[in-house]
Length: 467
Ligand code: SAH
Ligand code: SF4
Ligand code: F3S
Image 1 (cartoon, rainbow, N blue to C red):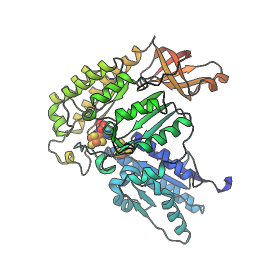
Image 2 (image 1 turned 120 degrees about the vertical axis):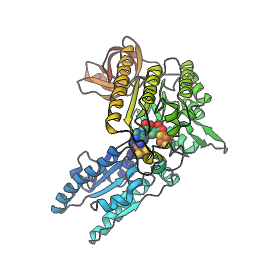
Image 3 (image 1 turned 45 degrees about the vertical axis):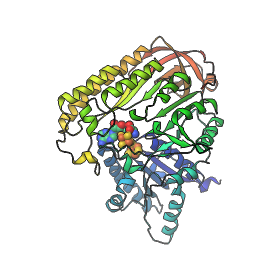
């Protein structure tokens, strides 16, 4: 491509890993149209905000970003240059009409299931502009099928660890959550498509794959003979063919944590001993009001079974404090559950009322200051646990996948099996290439709250294909 014709594309990603994955796919799609990614919005011909609607703060941030971009767009227009401003993702899906009304500067609004049409939308927005018209596009169709089909054949960029979306949407309808509305009904990609993408990733040098889905362990993709595959079966297959060294999956729901899947943690060595399994709360009354379909004890039992299957498994979770009607005693049940389980890492949030969800209109909304105090108490315990977990790995030798350069000279950063960031210093820049993208045995020398430091002992032997 002639360099002078290259257009610039700036994309900002909010929210979860599904959005990170979607952003990567949009970058692929637009690269085929001659758009190169830029880190500075002010030099971009196309700006996309890939938004998140999960909590009020996340959604509001989009409007303040639009405000800043409007100034940039106006300045560019003064210089005779054009900038297409697009809002994609979950806020677009939930509030598309409002964005069109509230922010006239926005040229295009498209939901999470329509980004494969981005090139067409951009063409439409730019071509008609040339004749002085200002078309505005709103596309919030929710049929997932098409998006995956048209993206399944795209090239993959070179990296060591990659996401692979296998499932989208959610039918669980937790009473606080917007995802079933923004992402639509649960959908599993078929085995053939997943395997095609998996092999492409492996060929491009990917050694670690993270299977993504809002409810990834509810996966039930159709196989070649028309039979349904569980996530457990898919993981076993991926460990064999293309034989990834490391396999992870996120996010899971306790109700879909089957015995078969727990067995995979015992039997498939490549299935990493780390699991993000949100529980949200420790009170059965609150869990019921949340429509979670599990109890605190059924969650405890799952964790017990997982630990029997893979004793070293590290756990991560999500928590919501201050759900409508939550009493101090009920919050203390969450604290008790946290102490019982012991997390390596976790995310915790103040309940945020989301328009259109059942919990938003429940009585007894908890005052902001009570939520803040509960969150502080919970986060103090969770960070204490995280520090303790990290310190517990000092002195151990862990296999680390070295996946990016560190800030210092001769430094590489990788991940332990437990998702901890591990920094190693090779002492010599010439060794970087040799170790980059490899799994090596690292002796952990020290631990901070968010990362570890270690030294390479030797290259770890590849895990034999099993399962
Ligand atoms: N499908 C995943 C992720 C859902 S969104 C799951 O079921 O776990 C990620 C997290 O955001 C949720 O686990 C929950 O802890 C939090 N969350 C969702 N809606 C929220 C709300 N209205 N207020 C506060 N936190 C919320
Ligand atoms: Fe939201 Fe619940 Fe579905 Fe997770 S399981 S995406 S929290 S509705
Ligand atoms: Fe946010 Fe949508 Fe993900 S609401 S958390 S970006 S599914």
